[in-house]
Image 1 (cartoon, helix red, strand yellow):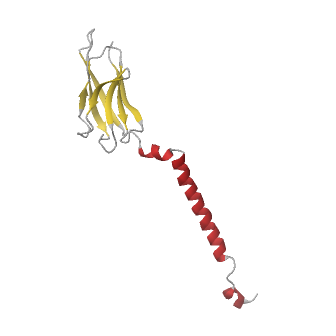
Image 2 (tube, one colour):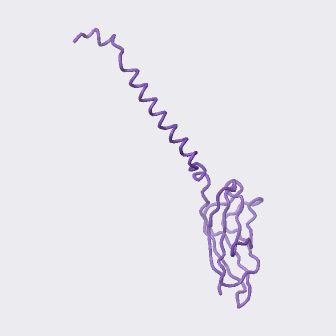
Image 3 (tube, rainbow, N blue to C red):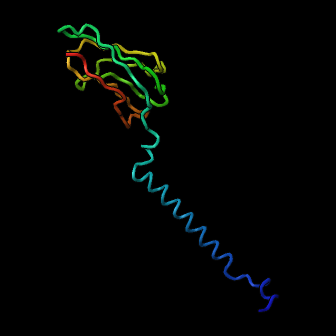
Amino acid sequence: MDIKNIFTDEDAVSPVIGVILMVAITVILAAVIGTFVLGLGDQVQNNAPQATFSFDYNNFDGSDGSVVVTHDGGDTFNSENTQSLTVNADGSEIGDFNVATNDISAGDSATTSAISGGTEVRVIWTSANGGNTATVASGTTPS
């Protein structure tokens, strides 16, 4: 073995490192592009805020009553993460939290219009870009 040759031999070190770096870059780019092509990138950014709501049922004595929906705690709903936060019954909007002008946080409430007993009431969140919706709370009026 010639020691002088070891210091002057420049074969195989740079090409091997270059190939490893190129493969790593290709894999990372493929993963990023694949995520957005399959639509997974939008889902990461549009998760519904986590919060709890309570439902207070008023005047349900055999006739139509109203429901007061109150944000009890959790994340704040604001114009950055929410386009609308509505109260729905049987697919129709019956109340609304005004997210356009107010941040909705613990203690805020919305009162519904008259609805009949035995109706499922839902709080529906719509993402800021309008692409996603989710039911963040639900309850059923007394029959």
